[in-house]
Length: 204
Ligand code: GRF
Image (cartoon, rainbow, N blue to C red; front, side):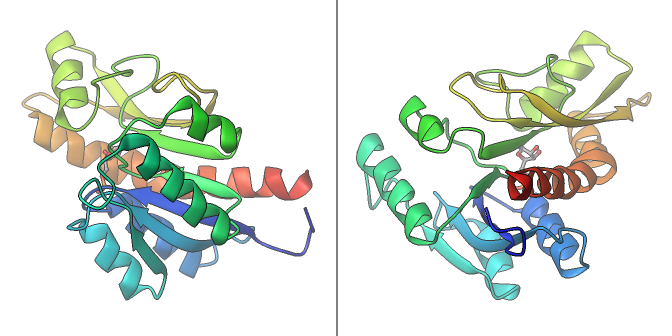
């Protein structure tokens, strides 16, 4: 890859997009000097993340189940859009669909994800959203956090890139804990890990 060019990033989203917001703000502040967010791709036409992308002047595209009911056709459309836009790194930021091995192989070592726990705790198939924090509280752990990792065919199973711990406090509810993990870990390490991977890719 040319050393002078920035790594072209796509952020995949399904919902509110606060992690996308953190990425966009960090990029604007010059904290992701080796990457450029070129595209936001959603599988949900109502995702507020699409509006956040537009607010930052970033191209926003939706490939939805409504328009592409067949899973393989939908994923192939996503691959087509990503390739058309020359995407070199895919950041999953609250993307609520498991990617097939066909997809993860197509972009091997070029997909990263943020998970709201310290992997290998409270992760894997079915662990998303509030369930992760409910499980941490039910187990009684005193520390949780967030993890950015590479994505392969095993849910939350790829190599870890960055983690940050967050304390659990007496009286925490899953909602309170979710908010603290986002504020104190996710919104910090996702932009940092994105920059780290962009720098690595530029060195290749
Ligand atoms: C975050 O908790 C993230 O860790 C998980 O999904 C949530 C997305 O939130 N993968 P948002 O859409 O970024 O606000």
